[in-house]
Amino acid sequence: MDATRILPDLQCSLLCEEVRQEANGNFFIIGVVNLLRVPQLPIVAGRLCVFNRWTAGIGRFNETIRLMAPDQMTVLRKAEMKFELNDAAMHTTNVMFFGNVEFKAAGTYFIEVMVDDVMKLRYPIPVVHVPPPNQNPQQTPPEKKD
Image (cartoon, rainbow, N blue to C red; front, side, top):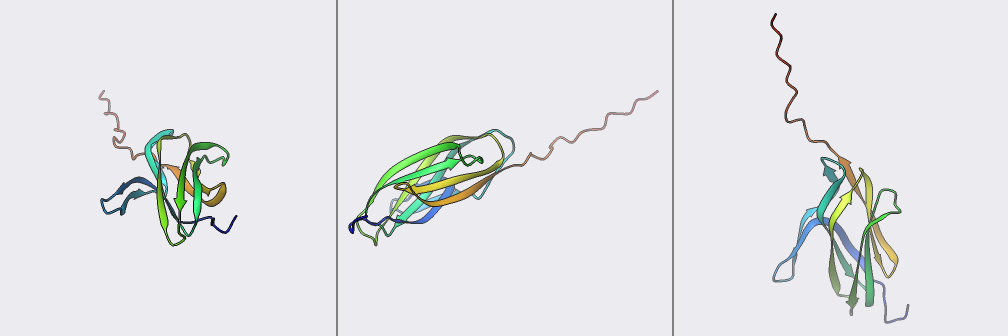
């Protein structure tokens, strides 16, 4: 790396349901995902967002986000975004959206965050199958009369 380029730090990365931005530039992060409890498998998540904030870097960079299957080899989704930081005291926020993600099996999935092919963070997203409670309990058949 030359003196005019410093690889940025990843200040935070959150998987969430939605990200919105106010007129003043502040972000609303809605539905931070710790794990996914699902009533059936396979299941499709209509929309997942990855909110990343970068700081303390100088230069132009390429951010890559990967959603990895439990086998840790299969890439379910990949997104890339270019960004620039001109001053190490500044920051930038990137939001990437994954639509219609199919989770075929329960297990631990992973979000990987890279900048210029350098892994900055990898975190687990467990998918847990929790069947819905039986809403129609089995009724005992009526007794037969002789």
